[in-house]
Length: 133
Image 1 (cartoon, rainbow, N blue to C red):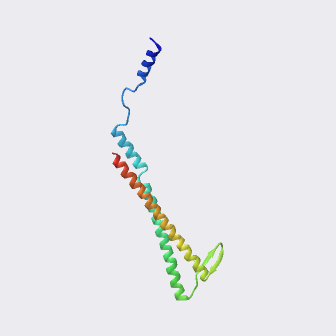
Image 2: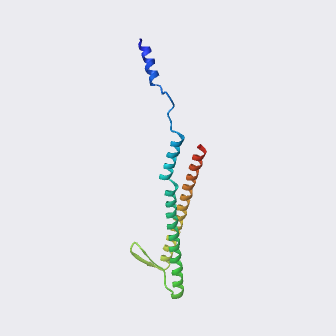
């Protein structure tokens, strides 16, 4: 027996005898386990927490400004804020408070946009997964 024949025999022995792959049932189980582990519930909790935080911030801002306006109109008191431990009042305090509210509203809009973008990514991923089946 020559070296070439022996090489061919070894090569033949090393070839796969059948196709190796996951069965459809195994693929289904893996997909279901993956969906449970990394499912939309994680994203849902994150969105719920962000929405709740935004609502609390909005409610707090509304209470702050509505309470201050009613106190200011009834008692003639002024707006007072503390910046870096220093008390500020009057027009400067009012401007600082309005700027803080504007920053908070911008933050809430940014969070809402990011949540919408993440939801769109999830939707595209899920559509892609269903189209593959």
